[in-house]
Image (cartoon, rainbow over all chains, first blue to last red; front, side, top):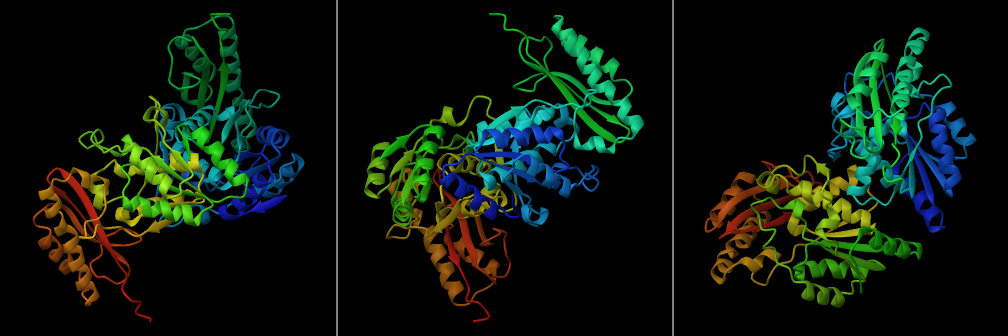
Amino acid sequence: MKIFRTAREMRAWSRAQRAAGKSIGFVPTMGALHEGHASLMRAASERDDVSVISIFVNPAQFAPNEDLDQYPRTWAADLALAERTGIDAIYAPTASGMYARDYSTFVLVGGVSEGLCGASRPHFFRGVATVVTKLFNAVEPDHAYFGLKDAQQCAVIQRMVRDLDMGTEIVPMPLIREEDGLALSSRNKYLSPEERKRALCISRSLFEARAMLEAGERDAAVIKEAVRDGMSPTDIDYVEVVDAASMRPVDEIRGPVFVAVAANVGVTRLIDNILFEPESPKS
Amino acid sequence: MKIFRTAREMRAWSRAQRAAGKSIGFVPTMGALHEGHASLMRAASERDDVSVISIFVNPAQFAPNEDLDQYPRTWAADLALAERTGIDAIYAPTASGMYARDYSTFVLVGGVSEGLCGASRPHFFRGVATVVTKLFNAVEPDHAYFGLKDAQQCAVIQRMVRDLDMGTEIVPMPLIREEDGLALSSRNKYLSPEERKRALCISRSLFEARAMLEAGERDAAVIKEAVRDGMSPTDIDYVEVVDAASMRPVDEIRGPVFVAVAANVGVTRLIDNILFEPESPKS
């Protein structure tokens, strides 16, 4: 497994692969890899000829009051997981290599980045869109695999790729949960045993929402009310029902939607969602 | 010579060239090609294995009160010039293909884009950086040739390429003038014979500035004063002496600078500049 520290080295390797006729699969990560990442990494290594992950805790997507310094770093375990899942190369640039002192270029994605996490974390998606652009430019992947745990992030990146005519296809992949329902997240490491237990009300509430939707409920307000009630043991940031493409709130559920939530459990911010696709009225 | 209308077709061709081991040279243009463009096109076709130009009048870099609709379109002549200069492919997307109705992604380059034309035309460099990103993503060039007539644009694109780790090398090329000194511009077509004559005071003032600099003048205020005086027959937008890398105004000339000007002659906005590199104090 190769490890590259600069965009120049990374791109030279990628171009050599492409010149040899190989497709490149890519999974951008901030490290602290868990089974959710592993599912993306396995997809990349199985579906593409060669596979790359990036490990970079991106300062540009953290606000000053957020957990940049505390964000978990588990380099040795990440490397071992990458080996195990058949990854061919790791791109692990340094913060100073990524952001020169006079760095001044940002990618802004409007529309889909507003609301939800974009409302609570105003610079978040600017940081995400910018770093993903940089990573794509270094890796030049054919396919990039993103987990639907970060559904809005996935929508923002898909919009960016479409708008900027990027030559990378985004492959959204299912959210992965613990057996008890908790959505996998690197930030779950922050939870105390008591908080870990309390956090389960988040997925439970979403499963209840899914049951209501499957039973025919189409009023977003009713769904949101039920989810809010179920999540009351947490400090709720948002509970929304949004169109799965535009990420805009809907009142009545007629097409694919995410029921998306964010909440603080203790000092730990968690997000989760379910995707619901009503059967087509035409079928 | 191939003509492509969509990013997908353009990229497929470019990737086939690269797979065949060929380097790709690229000249982005808005058409209405003149000898300035021709110098870039000849450089691309001589230095790279295959060469591409884009012809696209980019709505995103025009303000509502500017000359988008009047901007000269000379498709047949442009094609003939491209053939003559040895261009292999033209990328000529449509405005609706480039900007979907819900288009919402922009590339913002801070610092170098402020001041000069960025001050007079606030959305201009946002539009330029965004469209060049899109064109680069479609063409995937090894080298892109930009004329120093648009010195600030060149600095903005170089900064963007550096910041976003783009895999394209920017090649700045000298400004080209008419025999009488007028800097070549597609907008020169707007000038009446009287205005054409009056516009000559712009280049004449810059040549005077160069003579002063070569004679040892290092005070930017003195240079600007002389240029302003010389340009008085026009409606001056700005006269600045800026650091050639950062595009920030300087008071004392110690390193490479542009003396950069913009002025309206009648309703036509013209820009011009000279590059001056003082001999290194070490030599």
